[in-house]
Image 1 (cartoon, rainbow, N blue to C red):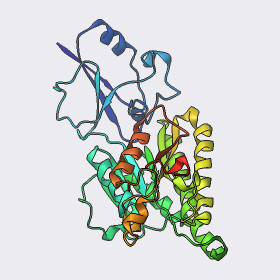
Image 2 (image 1 turned 180 degrees about the vertical axis):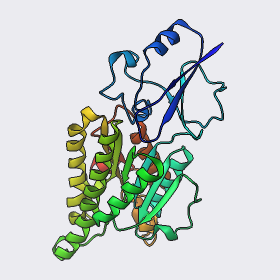
Image 3 (image 1 turned 45 degrees about the vertical axis):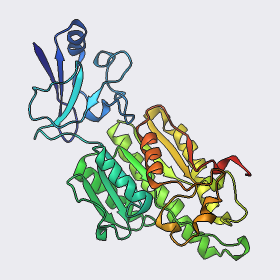
Image 4 (image 1 turned 180 degrees about the horizontal axis):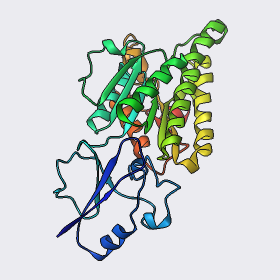
Length: 332
């Protein structure tokens, strides 16, 4: 005989967490301690711990609850014992939401497709992303045109994420500007352009995302794309000024990871080397292969997989993950 416990969380969207289990003493005891909670606070996907306002009696000993986000038509779900199913009043499943900047091509487009495939809601932005033909315009995808250097873009994206999907659970700061020159040829206009996208864009979007995560009290994940050149410059790649910005992003990643650790907001960076994207379409392949000790070029999906790993790994924060074919290691 199955028993069903229904919880009504204190959130804008009422979500019923339906516990489907076989009758057992541990489940009965667990059910007796359940109370009214905030739905997003009960996740084991690396994005949230229990709301600090919950009492000890509302949580299992380790403070985590397994949550399944599969859509169900009724409560006759052949789930394993103790599985929680997130459902809205309309019977729709509750998905996590990720915001992705620079989402129209290359790494950004790969991130959009992979997060959608994994069941996430996705809000993607770039200057002209609405014109993109790369994506299946599913109900879980929102595309917003805008320049990340403009604070209004971050406001519109954050508002759309909350209005359309109810939350912001993760942010990927992928938008970036990169170009090389001899140091003495860089101009102050070059520096301002680099800072506007790489630093100000990071600031606008990360502030809006963390503000929303704090309101949700459900934790969250921030991942920023930086560069392995911050650790190991290459003489033939004169990118000193872009590395001022990328190195700063590595530093702020660690600072924010510590600042928001107790809120379970995890902040990490992924540091790629040469990636097979349109950015390098005109570069000789042999030259690109010479830029790492392994002599290979990283596929977009490998970067995407690294970002997803950091996003969903509940115990990793303040980390700079190198996916660069060993380029950060030193001279080769």
